[in-house]
Amino acid sequence: MLTWVFIAFTIVVSVAGQLLLKAGMNAAGSVDQIGQLFSGHYLSRVACTWQVWVGLCMYALGALSWLVVLSRENLTSAYPFLGLIYILILVTGHWILGEPTQWWQVAGTVLVAIGVVLVARG
Image 1 (cartoon, rainbow, N blue to C red):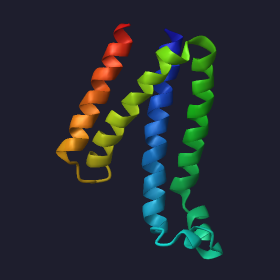
Image 2 (cartoon, one colour; image 1 turned 120 degrees about the vertical axis):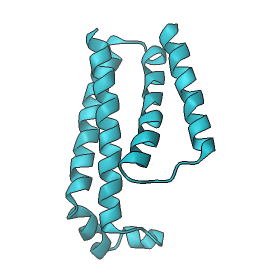
Image 3 (cartoon, rainbow, N blue to C red; image 1 turned 45 degrees about the horizontal axis):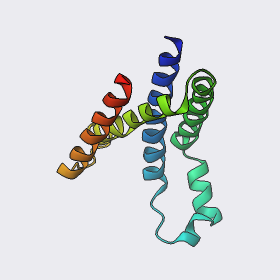
Image 4 (tube, helix red, strand yellow; image 1 turned 180 degrees about the vertical axis):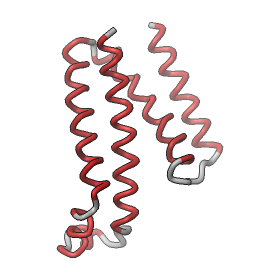
């Protein structure tokens, strides 16, 4: 039972981390050229964005939680559940960030969900 709690926690903090990273990068502005990514001005904008820092912390928490899962469960059994991240990102990206969703994204996400269900039954 405890393993499932850590799997769920990993999924939730991963989704939250992605949403925060996206919000932070929206605030920092888009990278138009790869060289811009390494400019001091752009890096300072990114570094001053709290959402990026909190998002990275969420990723670190998710990684620690995932290490607990890996210590308790077979990788081939646990890893497919991370597919739930795709589903939650599609939903939260649409509802929270207002991103458009296309039918093929929904179809692909449904296929991922079917795969997760099949693995969970096994």
